[in-house]
Image (tube, rainbow, N blue to C red; front, side, top):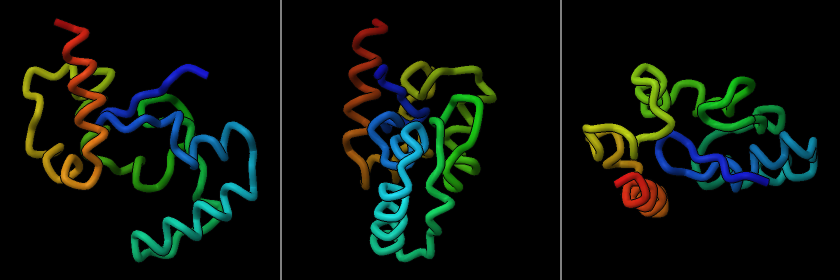
Length: 114
């Protein structure tokens, strides 16, 4: 499977919502909904665990539909934030605090662009 990189640097193809969707795996949806509900203090339903990737056409996990980082990349026509002349902006700061791997992914992409 090819890696799908989200606008923010998360790897969509490693996400359980993506995996559950492409494999139509109800068990993974249930486990993911339960786990995410616990760690995010939210009520995430099993049927919400559907996503084909941040910048792809098709269904997206509820958070991804409204993500400001994704919207910014779409407006600018960028495959991800690593291609943005304003990288790394305030939109990414909080995400990087919680998901440092996203910064590592974007920094790696930048090093390959230059």
